[in-house]
Amino acid sequence: MAIIDDLIQIYATNPADNVAADPYFVKLCEDNDGDNIFHATRNRIERVKRELEVAGELRTYRCQAQLALELYHQLVGSENQEDVIFLRIVRIAYLPKWTDKQKIYFDDACTTIATKLDYFLSFTQRNPVKGGNSVNSYHRHLIQSIGLPDPKDSAKNELAKMLDVVLRTSRYQLRGFFFPEHEDDSTEVKKKLTDAMDKSLVFIQLVQNEMFRKSYQPDENYCFIEYSQAVGKNKGMILLFADGEHPADLITKVAVRFELLDWYKRIGGDDCLDLGPTRVAEEAINIKPNLEKLKEKLIEKVNDTRVALWEGVPGDLD
Image (cartoon, rainbow, N blue to C red):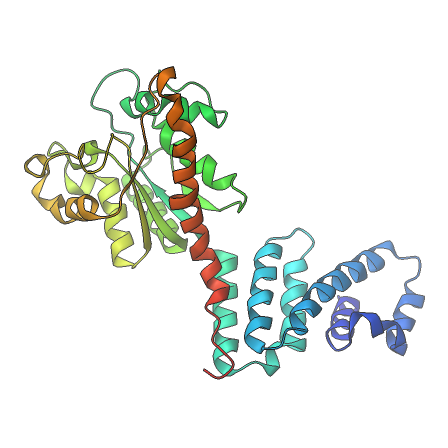
C-alpha cells in the first residue's frame, strides 16, 4: 500500500512525462523490476494522470473541475480502483488551486456520481382485464422492436420493462431503479422505494388510467406513493402516458379518486409524452417516430440531469 501511496504522490506532483527524472521513482522501479503487480499499478496511475493532465491544461479552474467530474463519472466503480486513484490525484494536484465553492461543489458532485442513480421508473402492474395486459397489446410491436419477446399474452407491464431496457442500453448507459414486483411485505417494499427515490436524480412515471380508479385506497397505490415522494423531494419529473393519446384518452376527472386529484391535475396539464399505437403490423409505421420521441424526450432529458452535475461547477469568480 505504501508503494501505491508513493506512486500517487509522484504522479500527482509531476507531469507524467517527467516522472522518470525523479530519483525516488527510478529507485522504486528498480526495486520492483520483476513485480508485475507494481508495474500494472504504475500503469493505471499513469493512465489516470495523463487523462487528468488534459483537464489541467484548460485555462480556467471551472473547466478543470468540469472535466474532472466527467472523468470521475467514467471511472466510478472501476474494478481496479482507478476511481480512488483519480480522486487522490485530483486532491493533490488540482483541487488546492480551486475556489472554496468549487472545492465544495466538486466533493458534493463526486458523492452524487458515486451513490446516485440516474432515474427511478414508476409504473403499475394493475390490469382491469383478465389475460394479457392491455398496455402490452397497445404497444406490442414497439416492445418487440428492441428485441424483447412478443408481449401480447403477458400479464406484466412489458412496456415498463422496455423503457428500462431502452434507458440502460442507450449510448449513455443510464443507471436506474426498476422494481417489477411489489409482492413483498408492504413495509419492506415502501422502504425499498424510499431508498431508491433518495438515490435517483430523475423520476419517470409510466402513467395509466388504472392508477387513478376509485377502487384502490391511496395507501395501497404505490404509484401515488412514489409520485408524492418525488414531489416532496423536488425530483426532476418525466411523465409518459401509456393508454393512448394525451390528454384525450386520460381518465375523466369525475372517475378519479378524490385524494388523487392533485396528482391527476399535474398529469393532465403537464407535457406528458405519449406514443403512437403499434397494436398490429399496419401500425408499425409508428415505431420509428416512437423511438425518436423516447430518445429526445426521455433518454436525452435524463442524461441532461447527469450532465448538469459537471456543468453546474461554479465559475472562478463566483
